[in-house]
Length: 222
Image 1 (cartoon, rainbow, N blue to C red):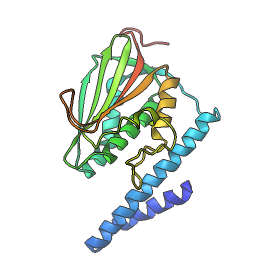
Image 2: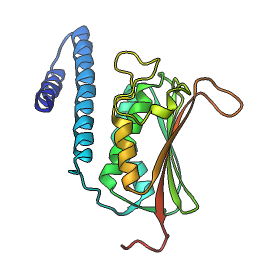
Image 3: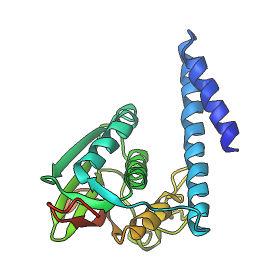
Image 4: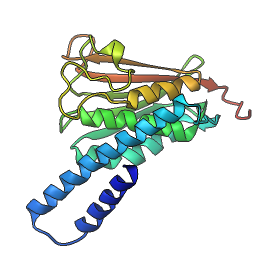
């Protein structure tokens, strides 16, 4: 299935380079977006299956947290712009380094941004934040989206979980389950807070917080 979806995406890209009527282009773009979404779900499913069978290795190395954020913005900025969203950063790391697998952590952050895009209305913002807190490197993805019901919060890291308000393709899928697996293999933790409506404690939306063990500023060797 993965190979066939890749072929469909390739054909869509080729077709979109040609001249065509605008309604046809819009329909083709819709096909591409939905195929890409399905492709991501298949990839996530394969990753989770490999993780549970022990086929995935987490290779830890010193990683600059600021670089993780910059790479994530580079890889997801176009996705946010197409959805009419602002992707902002607030980084206060001063050379903060974590012991991490950079490829896997980028995958986690990109997945969290993609989730935020999917559940946010056009015109909103998504913020990527990073800072030091004691012995931890903290990374956060905040959105101003629809929020998550309190009853759903304890189940978000379960594979294929769909909240009571989920419709069509808007469930939480397996991306969060994979994110939890990866973060825990870094001796870190991941948590989600959300509000369905703005209140004195904060605006409506969802915040995902990742904590990873930070390295000493001068200790960049293993």
